[in-house]
Image 1 (cartoon, helix red, strand yellow):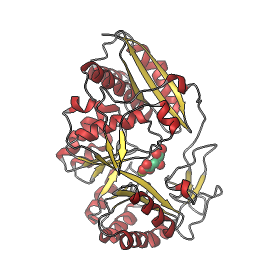
Image 2 (cartoon, helix red, strand yellow; image 1 turned 45 degrees about the horizontal axis):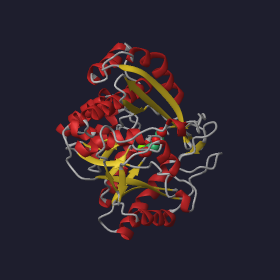
Image 3 (spheres, helix red, strand yellow; image 1 turned 60 degrees about the vertical axis):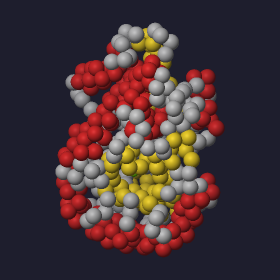
Image 4 (cartoon, helix red, strand yellow; image 1 turned 135 degrees about the horizontal axis):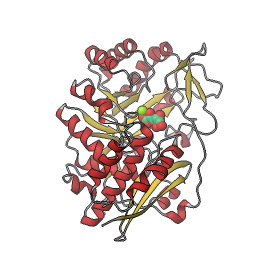
Length: 411
Ligand code: KDG
Ligand code: MG
């Protein structure tokens, strides 16, 4: 069996999804997601200019060797662009493998460990009352776990009038959707105001919804280690499911300090692209959840390795699932989630619009806050090239963050 061709498409409804399709001489094809949010053309170029020419005539069944070929063969290893491109190829090869076997990918990994995988939604509020409404909205839809972000009183608005973790008010704002359009938007941050206010938000949520709601919160890399440690200690009584990215992920020593200061469960890793980014913190058991994604962390082949390592150290999975992940990588993660003995939770934000479903037809199902993986052969998600013609690339940027005095801060 041989790979005969591979093509890359960019675009989607309101998104720059980077979709890879690998064709074979047996008529079977596979699909992969290489969407690197706000740097999408780079992964597309990496695939087109460097990886795809080497793929032609390779046997698609040798996914491990192909992974090693691109990882080791680059000489300059790792980095989000290369790993997202390798990840897309890897996803497509697992898709092909499953189709050859006539089995869903989770069967090739070791079968199902659970029927449905718990997902969490994003609830935001411009103020606490608004946030409580949004959480209630998700509870009514069956979600048992919600990530909560709230506007902070007196936190100055940046020149683009966006606040920390907050979308606009109203029904269409039940999800936190960052505005990536145009040049980088600017946000203002003040750790003191955040630290003074946020514990009272958790208190109100617990008072309102009781002990069973799983509360997750994303600090988005904003705190100094000392502040993060004190914050973690202060909010232990609210029993969070996790505290995400308390400090910038580059500095692993900070996590040691946080771990030794508080029992609040720590989740980190959405910006990691390799096992080498998280090996030490997993082995030292400084974290509780690993947030890598199959997209930026080298596909199923590499993420499986991270999951296996994590399982030895009581670290559970909590894969990144922001809207920039196309339904293809969400499907690849669903297969790992169905199998992983140390599955924790899955972030879920793909907005199931009709346009998105038409572009990526699939039989995966999200119901009552659970993701039910498809039993179709392969990844269980397709890509409609005719639909893809409706969309084109639009450049965007992540927001940037400054302190009130203008100092650039961590986003
Ligand atoms: O591209 C970056 C976003 O996906 C990120 O800001 C979202 O922190 C995020 C999350 O937890 O989904
Ligand atoms: Mg996050």
